[in-house]
Length: 101
Image 1 (cartoon, rainbow, N blue to C red):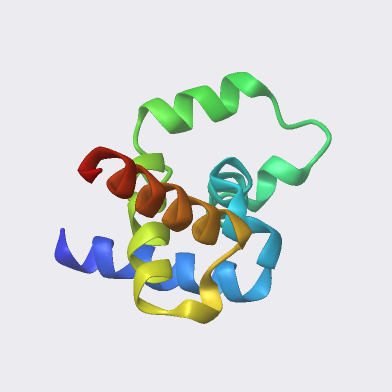
Image 2 (image 1 turned 45 degrees about the vertical axis):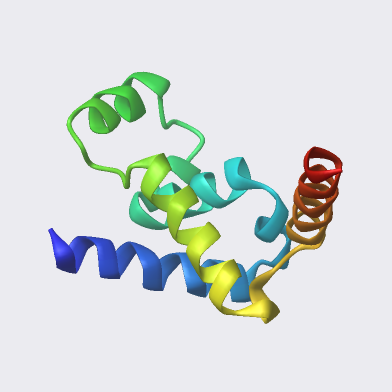
């Protein structure tokens, strides 16, 4: 289990470095992760049914694990942050100021 988590985290880091557009788009990040796990999805004849069966049977990383790994990595490594990260931080700070005033 721990090895799986480490592998997901490392792969997410690689994706964030290789594809900067994934830094602000979890759906794109998840899709790229799944395409990496199942390259046959790129084929024209690939059917949704094939994907659905594989997904239900656990052939793909859990999307929440991918999202959480992205968030942890962006907190630790500023170079992996996208524009949305900075917007969320500013919004959070403004919300704290509004609540405390």
